[in-house]
Image (spheres, rainbow, N blue to C red):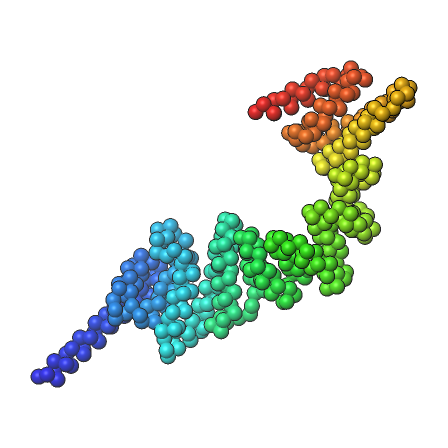
Amino acid sequence: MKKFFLLIAAVSISLGLMAQKGKVTSALSFIDLGTLDKAKEALDMAFTNEKSMNWFNTYFAKGKLGQAVFKADDPKYNGYFTDPLAEAYTAYEKAMELDVKGTTKKKIITSGIYNSLALDLYVQGGKRFEAKDYEGALKSFASQIQITESDNYVGGIDTGMYYNAGLAAVNAKKYNEGMKYFEKCAEMKYLGITPYYQIYECYLGLGDTTKAESYLLDLPNKFPDDKTVTLQLIDLYLKSNKLEEALNYIKVAKEADPANFSLYLAAGLTYLNQGRNDESIPELIKAIELKPEMFETQYGLGAAYINKAADMFVKANDIMDVKKYSAAIDEANVVYAKALPFMEKAHELKPDDVYAMRSLQELYYRMKQLDPQYAPKYETIKAKLNAIEQK
């Protein structure tokens, strides 16, 4: 009688375990059918029962559900997971850990489950990046990399994923992480010199301009035929206020690319900021010849003439001889007049720029003292400027 009782108990335990495992089987079937609400209900029951809560297949089903929820992209499933793909990945890893016989690992490999999960993470990372959730994008791309580097992934490595992760890291201001991914790109010779520039930007992001400069200066050794390094050095020196170094490299760059208007603009504005107006003017004239429809060049040349004329007025005030003083003032007014067409063009290109309007107001005021025809223009620009400044 006792043996019979034990046999009944054993059968009862076995049937109970099978019933709970049946919930997992049902969950997997519901996932395949797309009825994810029923799958979640069945899986919740499996996770709350001690007989199936630590079964490897329960975690495998959770991983499948996480991926299905992500792909469904239906708001009604949003409460199922905080991060469906991250939780799916964790669940798959747990399933393989619990399955000592290795059947789950084999299933993941032969079914290409990690291949599809890596692709899902790539899609998720792209969506997060577009939404400016850079930390979230980095998390997705980092998980994609981790998966594809594992022995559970079948197929080749997509080098672009390291670049994606690097961009996400930089935008999240995690420059050390970004550098790690861009260094991997450089090691794999992905996108040529581009990842090297990204590493340089990481150094700048970390505030290490010395290292950034040294890194750039070494790039010609790696890419002797690439002319863009000079442009990057110009940009660095301008940002670092090392203006003489910037001007030296601008000269080198102009010799290699004499039709590049931006080099003349950079030189002109650099001289302008140093108060070297006579050197600024020919550079900006050349920039306008190459690209006339640009506010910065037109405004810059107008400002250079205004500054030069203002300096001439200051010097004229030191002249004691009346005739010489009058001649010097006339010369200064001629230079002021030279500024007018360029400042007017700047205003035409950017009508709401307050600085251009203020410069025009000053010019029209001076010009109307010499020629009354400028008086209406002075009043018009003065009224427009007042209306903007009173808002």
